[in-house]
Length: 304
Image (cartoon, rainbow, N blue to C red; front, side, top):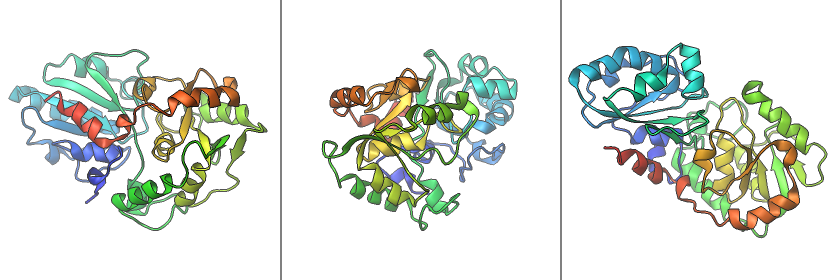
């Protein structure tokens, strides 16, 4: 059994396992929904559904909830697809109408939020850190040996202590360029072009183990973190957990990043090291409460 629920920092699995109802095995981007898991939903339960399988939930489970006339809190995530717009287009279902106009659903929390405006019945939740890949040993390259989520976090916390923010170099550091995506307006391509040959930027020369990369992060004040295959990115949270400031481009995720120690750029071409240094003086003092799993658990519980 995964132990992300025992970690301090937020992760998609930690949020999933904090819910009353969730798949016993959270498989990213699955199209399957274990129907038996959802047969005993009770009034006021928080119910976790992998975003990519939401169509099955709406077609097979939601009608049963309506028959029982009970109310739930819906939580979706563990998928790279953006919600609700991209998912609605992909499935041919107006999820805002189906979910937000349904009196049985008290509130909807979703990962990879892609509305450009706020919605009174939808709240964005963060992707957080990836503990599950190393825990299962299913790494695309050498991230290191298999470790539990708690063991990974203990190492993360120790590495974060190595350098204060003030002692880190006034440079940006990037390690996203090994894999670029066409999605999200080729954000990684534009970020890469904006920092190419800039004297203030340091690029990781070749892929390294995750702990080695974490150690390198603590040498720099700023970590370049464009969108990847998903709108949100684990790297953004790793940077903050390790005491650096991630640099991102404005997006619907700004609603999550508000009040976090993050610098949001209008576009990548506007990146300027002197402006980053100046802005960091206030950004680094921002609250870290949104980095913790407990904060998001409490956000969900308030709708019970």
